[in-house]
Image (cartoon, rainbow, N blue to C red; front, side, top):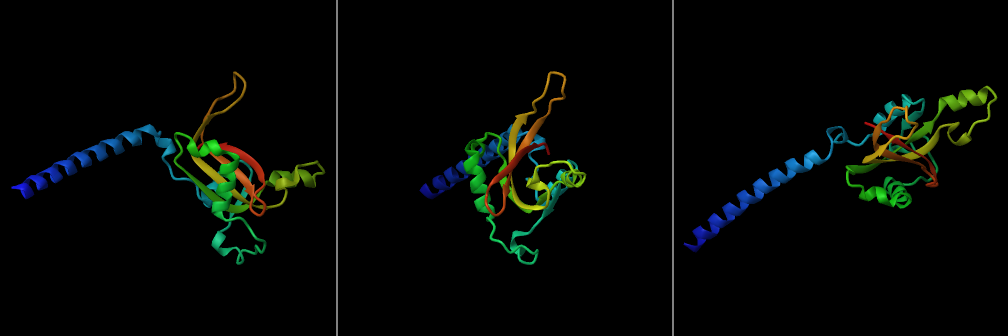
Length: 177
């Protein structure tokens, strides 16, 4: 009789747990807007998005550094994320954060190159392709700034661009995916 009672209790608790898990999962998925539930960007997604803003990003596979002609020592993905986390410690605890990733690649701005060739003085940071880590915090929301008549937008991603060899922060940008 005791075995039968124990078995019934286990089944009842299992059913209650299962229902609770399903309800909790359904509720949690409603907390994050559907446009923020997309995957974090990989190098090719960054390449396409940055190209629309006149930037060139060529992803580099960290496992194939020597084959891609890179001989200097670079930071690992984890080191790049650690540096960004130290610079922006509050981002890791953002309520809507869906993840943090980092993509290695060469970043440049062809517009800077053409302006420099035309004799204009330009910031040399991205004049030539520079090896960088782009650390992405997905689910970090911010409202765009601007005057009262400017269009307002909400971004859902915060990106930190670090020099891949020194860890120096080169710039940040926000994005909407």
